[in-house]
Length: 283
Length: 286
Ligand SMILES: Nc1ncnc2c1ncn2[C@@H]1O[C@H](COP(=O)(O)OP(=O)(O)O)[C@@H](O)[C@H]1O
Ligand SMILES: [Mg+2]
Image: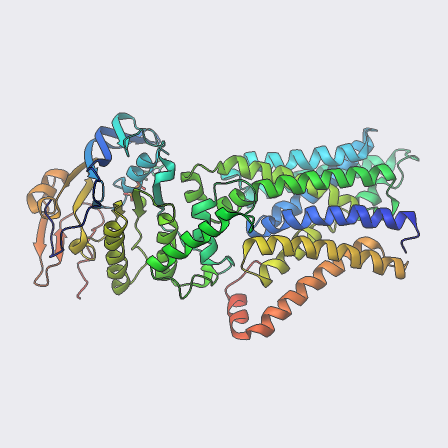
């Protein structure tokens, strides 16, 4: 399968995007911001379609919208941890706008961008050019490096906001940077798995990592590993069975990893597992 | 220095000059356009164990925030460890009010303590560095000091309130602070645990020679361990030895309303007639 250029491109870009998703996803789950990630996926959809309607670069629209969306959520939310009402409002508004753009887009003659809507919704990982791959790698490395640079104070601020603030950790600024990073990574992941399935790649590998270890930095590494692994498994499955779309196979693999992690913890200590379930555990 | 109870005089490290950990002079705090307290003057000496008492809403947490430099004073002056508030972050250990982790927090207690030491540093910890070993040793030390070795590696969300509180005290201690600010650390604990944590704080105060300001709702579990109390009420504060402050005359003057302090046969103090929520649980027998 490595003989095909489209497959090599998908594997290279997918690995790096998966890495960034796994790292950011760990904190998305830790900070209980899964809903924010979900909202951003719709922002991604709307941003890309808006760009398509306006005849601009779709990718540029995608990135601008999600990064801006993250920053806006951070600014509107309390202590840079956007609350559900803020996200919900932004989410509904954006989705409405997206539907509007989709309507305009499908009614106007758009031969050149005919598949843009579909590509945004479901991803286009098998159609990446050399430039796409290079961009994906550069941005993912940038996002990953930035996340690792802020990982420790972000962990502190996420777990223990008051003490972190008292020690001089810039809690609010970190929250904002994190949401902007989440926007950037969401935009990237949208290219790989599409806006509809983006959340799965952000939340499932990270959820599995949180299940399997209580060591934060090991969890961060596991989350990245599971995310990259899901992309490889998904791409391989889709290659072997060409009727299966890569995006849904990637998400199926990610969710599979999560279910395996659940099963492992349940088997390890059944009573503690069910007690946690009863107490409503997010991860 | 006078003290209730029969404690041996504290050993002060040789060569350590007594200096003030916290000094407020006619300080005032305003929140949301309302003056919470004003004309507050108090002094906490190095190595002192001081309780901050008062009814709910009196401004005890506000006092802690002012010491931390998170809330600028509206009037007066303050000095914390010889500097303006906010300039000694590395020398202050802080335990905020009502902090508990829900069962979903799947991070070990030891990691939380560790963040108290290195959480403000950028990057991720690299196991190869010499500082990594040193930090790990210090974390082990404080966990042993608070007696949390048995459960420090369990997820913090799955521990009891008393166990969490001990780990949080360890976290506040890990940077060898000279001043420890504990906001209602006894809040959610049962009586035996309240006494145990109070004894622990007293021991820390002596062994590590730190000044402690402990905000409490009920003075009785800590009465035997204290050096001084700061009593906040009615927008004012009185500071002194417990038996000077917690008297009918002093509290009546502070509240501007008749207050009676009774001493139960077992030595507990009961304050009667407070306009707001009572700080002593009068219905307890122990
Ligand atoms: N951010 C705020 N804005 C306005 N008022 C506040 C704020 N925070 C606290 N307060 C008020 O300040 C008073 C003192 O609060 P606090 O210091 O928390 O009291 P305590 O810790 O003694 O119970 C309370 O009446 C509270 O309602
Ligand atoms: Mg308070």
